[in-house]
View 1 (cartoon, rainbow, N blue to C red):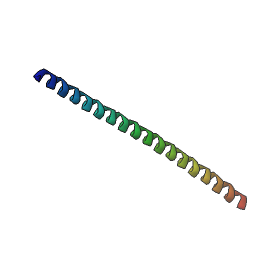
View 2: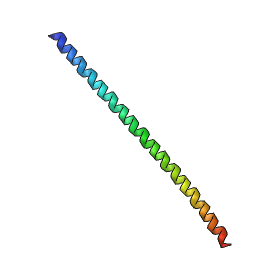
View 3: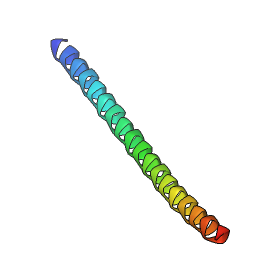
View 4: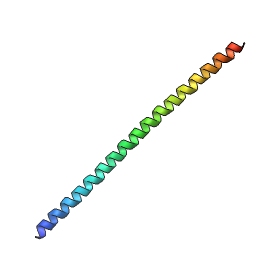
Length: 64
């Protein structure tokens, strides 16, 4: 009987460890996805600033 209890406890510990590892993996994936989204947003913003500067330059040169 004692052996069965030990086996059950070991199985429960194993399942808890697996659940924690899976949660950590999902958390890392979520962080990576957020970083990619942030990077893309930064690149779009830089491109928008560059384009706005080009347009301002075009408008300023048209005034002369």
